[in-house]
Amino acid sequence: MIQTDLSDVPQRVSTGDLPSLSRVGRLITDAHERYASNDDGIVADYIPALAEADPSWFGISLVGVNGSRHAVGDVDVAFSIQSISKAFMFALMCERYGREELVARIGVNNTGLPFDSVMAVELNDGRPLNPMVNAGAIGTTALVPGENIDERWTIVREGLSAFAGRPLEMSEEVYESETRTNDRNRAIARLVYSYGRMAVDPAEAVEVYTRQCSLMVTADDLAVMGATLADGGVNPITGQRVVSNEASSDTLAVMASCGMYERSGEWLFEIGTPAKSGVSGGIVSIAPGKGATGLFSPRLDFAGNSVRGQHAAAYISCALGFNMFASSPHAREKSSLAH
Ligand code: GLN
Image 1: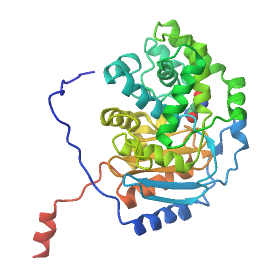
Image 2: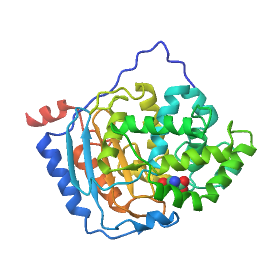
Image 3: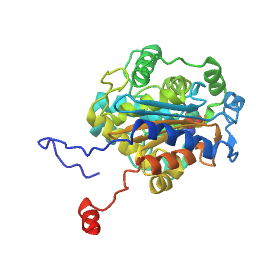
């Protein structure tokens, strides 16, 4: 990677506002109504506990960086955070070690392969390539400092809870179910370790990672967590600085390129936001400087992304101006047209 030294250059940020509060509320409700009857996709069952989800659940929550909140549908239903934790763990470790270290150890490029791909590791000399797939996420969790599993787990739980602005609890049921069936993750971690790219016992890294994935959140929590990254690392509800501006923008960049598995490019093309999904049906979609949407509905596409969540996120991105690439001609044209 070309790394340009910009340490002497103050970072400027582009800004923008969400539409008025009443309009945001109406658009969120519209998004829910439009896709509530979509029954495409299937509920994940490779982790047996996930198969118990009610396929009709559908919740959308939006939190602005100014602390404004809107919610519709099943926004209080708790589900396991799964892969969405990967983005926030990357932010926490970026904060702790700095971006160079994370780029060197994990990488920030899309694999183009499924989230649990062994091939991706094998083809790249054991380098996980990015923190949003299992190899890179287990590698990121392996960086959490601590003498033992419980010390590391405490750092993970407290860090993710700070993003949510409330203490998150682990589901024993999901944890046990995933522990019984996560041979593939153990194999991936051991493979990365065999290349000399993991400093701790791979079984311990998988243990902490599995607990991390079993933390229970709601669509509301996802919106607050995402809004914290949208707000330069400050939780807009609690006011707590969770990570630095730099760690936030680095995380958003990796989410934009890698957050939606093999569909990441299509997502960026169609929806145009940094986002992360998880196999329990959650998606967080972020408008940097504005806010974030937490979406939840358990039916998934082939890659593991919530179907209704993707449709609703597309609608919200279009209708609320979340798309980072959308622009319109400068005002001068409008005034010259008017005359
Ligand atoms: N805990 C899940 C796993 O490791 C997370 C996967 C996901 O959400 N895509 O398989």
